[in-house]
Amino acid sequence: MSTSNEENLERLVADNCLKLFADYQLEIRSGDLGDSFKNRQFLLCGVIGFTSKHMRGALVLASTSEPLDRTSPESTTHRDWICELANQLLGRVKNQLLNRKIEVYPSTPIALRGEHLSPILQQRLVAELFMAGGGAVCVWMDCEFDDGFELPGASVEDAAPVPEGDMVLF
Image (tube, rainbow, N blue to C red):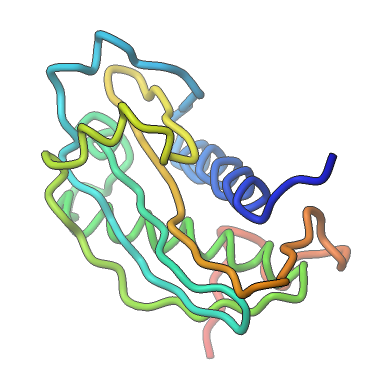
């Protein structure tokens, strides 16, 4: 059975989200928050759009305050930090898409208050919902694909163009 473009992309985004937060020494794990989350809301979400030759959309990273408190530098606001995390996450996904011969062009990330995102947990639109200590992180990509385009499920090259976490100046 072949996997769909959406499934390939969702897995790529979720795996990279786990790695991103691990790099900031915060273990997040997949899970259903169930009743423990019903009266809570996401603090903020970072949204970053992107385009490529055969797909376009946006990556959304939503978080309660706890993961942001535990990972952000002291001098950074939560609003700036969620944008930076969304930007870093799309950068990781972009690297892996380059390995699949897909070049992605990101836009500038924006932050939105998260209180209106809580109802989405009742739908199956999210790629992944993670528990993070006393909080939660949710990530998904809203993406359109050109008709007939197939997103490769695995890399077609051996190494990432730039290892995640490295800085490139140009």
